[in-house]
Image 1 (cartoon, rainbow, N blue to C red):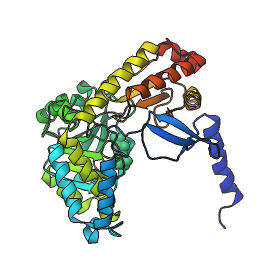
Image 2 (cartoon, helix red, strand yellow; image 1 turned 180 degrees about the vertical axis):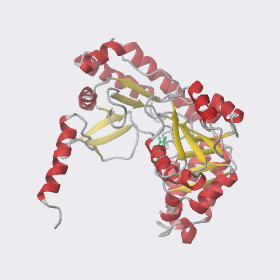
Image 3 (cartoon, rainbow, N blue to C red; image 1 turned 30 degrees about the vertical axis):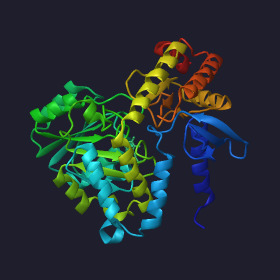
Amino acid sequence: MAFIDAFRNRYQTEIDGIKAAGLFKEERYIHSPQSSDIEVEFPAGSKIKKCINICANNYLGLSSHPEVIAAAHAGLDSRGYGMSSVRFICGTQDIHRELENRLTEFLGTEDTLLFPSCMDANAGFFEACLNEQDVMIADRLVHASIVDGMRLCKAMQDTFKHSDMGHLEEKLQEHMDKRSRMIITDGVFSMDGDMAKLDEIVELAEKYDAMVFLDDSHASGFIGRTGRGTHEHCGVLGKIDVITTTLGKALGGASGGCVSGRRELVEMCRQRARPFLFSNSVAPVIVAGALKVMELITATTERRDKLEWNAKYWRGLLKDAGFDIKEGESPIVPVMLYDAKLAQDFARDLFDEGIYAVGFFFPVVAKGQARIRTQLSAAHEKHHLDVAIEAFKKVGEKHAVLGLGKKELLARAGA
Ligand SMILES: *Cc1c(COP(=O)(O)O)cnc(C)c1O
């Protein structure tokens, strides 16, 4: 009994502070499979409500695809439920290696290693491959898991302004004395939905003898003409030294991630990456489902094509309605509100109208950058989006944000 009142009070005060600042996050319980139409209990204890989901990373609509589910069932029957082991002791089945080979082929790399998640891939990669003699130069908006991975590594850390190639070049010049330089970026940035200028990054990497690290979690499976990712979109397939990505978004949405890239870098991870060595292997049922996902997405580009259409259509609807959105080409479409409390109220009102979207605010995005992040899916039909936009208009009118530009919205947020 060491949790004395003083400890309890301290944490309660902190939690109260989070609430007072309008930054408190509440969970919503979903009673159905993940899909465009879901059943939600919110707040806890209330009646279950049918909603249109417009905030999942279910980009290709494969999270509950009948063929993926069937393959997962078959995998469960043939390879069992769990491995009860990390990979290097007795956690590697033939299907783990088969999935790694499929990913290597799809991503256009030399080898691939599965991790329990992409968060783990990012947590393990840097420490396994770099040390005091090297420097990591990261875009300032990289995903939190990369920031954590860099913290665990002894290499020198530096950053460049978001997508600012001039600044990146300065940094590369500044660090020519290091044994090696690694440029680190997301492919599609998760909060704004914009894409890295990978073609220019590769050019700079070649000029200054630097390696390129790409986290393509919000791109693998659908960005690029055949969905291989941001490197395909930017015309630099085969030129990225390391790609990390997740199975938890477009690629079935269950869990798992990987490091894919130069043979030697992947081998270093197999020997040294701590989340690979000290955490359980991806469950066979997920591996079996993911193998089916790889088969589906290489057989046809139908799903990524539909997703592209949906994203374009949705962007048009929001713009015509008078919302301030972040421009881009990805299926991540942020509706900017700039105020945390407004973003939360807005999401709650959308929910009352049968639309499931969540407000994003600090610390998920910078202070004063609150928004509703909408995300499209190949599982959306046109009617989903037509219904959703009516709800957005109604709630937008209620909060008087329609037709307001960034300046006016910011002024309002500051008031
Ligand atoms: C979602 C995401 C991750 C984390 O993936 P998990 O497999 O869920 O751990 C890592 N990096 C980026 C850029 C992401 O968007």
